[in-house]
Image (cartoon, rainbow, N blue to C red; front, side, top):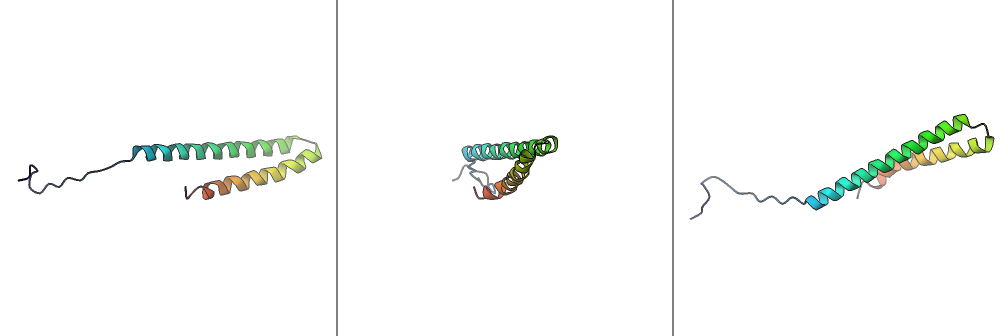
Length: 81
């Protein structure tokens, strides 16, 4: 005879806390990288508006565009991980 009451089923649940912790760390790392990219893009935009040196302005624009492309593509590149 079973020691369980009639009509009660037991479900064993396995929670992998280690993988949950790793996923949380990866999410936090991803958020930090995106925040850093946003800060760098904002700093370049500000510097481009303040600096009067033409060669410097010529560099700030493409670098800002490149960082924006990285920021937009970064979550997509890491979506499968």
